[in-house]
Image (cartoon, rainbow, N blue to C red; front, side, top):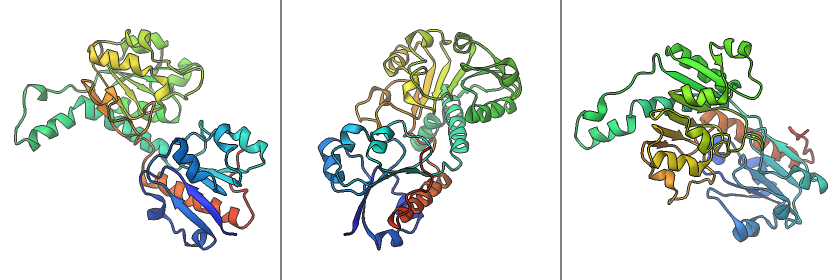
Length: 321
């Protein structure tokens, strides 16, 4: 019997574009979905699947769904972590799980962070719109400069450190906080350690680069947003759960902060009626931080490698520990 493989959430239509699936399709029936599936529709498409490919954590793959998939034999997800995958439920059924490598996603997220910072500060969308309307500069074309401003980083891992180095090159002061921050660690990349409240109070731009967890959920809440300067800007290319979205929307609507540039959302794709689509002084992008050609090439190569191995009885390519 031919195996059935279901590939979820390839919104970018990347898999077939980036890699040859002919060897897999010679042995199995493959169905790739380019739109999100939910509820009964999702279950209907998965109920006969022998293998499922998850694009990161776009679709929750939890025990309640897993127990309704009697034929499931194998799961592959892209990247190295998936917070929406119930690994315990799969292991209980002895269903192997594999993942791909990441590719240079930290570089692409760093670049997007600076694209958002510069795009917001230089009002690029607004200035571009002027020209397309056959207009020229106006009173909103007098723009700030970053030199001498303070960048506050919440988190100083691989991405935060990269962001900090660019800020230093721009002549910015960098202050940073994380639960395990030390003055020595901050100084190593030209920054100064500070408390979270100090970061919120003193920064002209605040950028989030901390791991999402139960302890960091909602770390930027109503109280922390109230500490920000009236003209300060919040940047989030990390995880939506780090920020209380309702509190952020209120702060933007009441103009109690200068603005926000956001790439990650509680619900993705972002609903058409979501308030962040219409809040003032807001620059939003459709979760582009990791969406880069070399990253997706790594994903596609890894998925095909894993599936080919599974089809030949070797579901041991990059398994979960």
